[in-house]
Image (cartoon, rainbow, N blue to C red; front, top):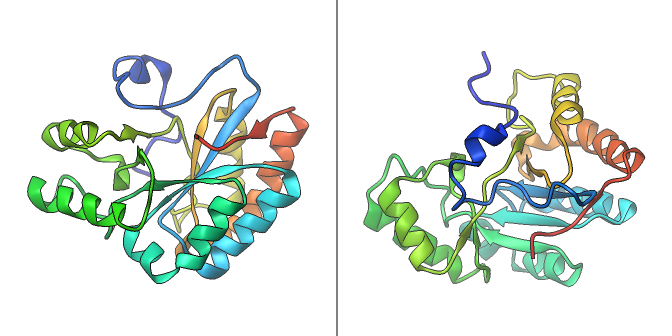
Length: 206
């Protein structure tokens, strides 16, 4: 059973304006984001597809994965994409002490040079949130969650969600991880074609 929202409504995002949920609703641009990488084969697939559509994206990556794949990190930046901090070990803010969480964010920052931060699972307690802001980060969430991580969900259902909820300025979450690869291979080409047909392009967040 699905336990997460496909779309974050404006009545909610308008109450928490210190987070970046979406960008300009008047501009025909979306902001594709990919979490949890880099993962060599998966990230390479995503990059080639982005290139073929002339799209740019933002990758919220795990510091430990970047440490193991520094060439991919450099390649993404050279191709004009952006990166963001997603902690060093994909920690859940609600499950660990503040001191441990912040050390993990700082450790990731040794390998990921960015002022963008996305908390794993979208979870961030108030004290940790304040500390992240004090470190100079912009906290990026989303208004459309693809659901690519859900192994019980069919690609057709994911695409239906994306088609229904994408709008100007949307920040959309995907994952360049092994778990999501088979789903991405079916979903991304169709979704990118949909964006083109709607006259939308994708830019990085910086």
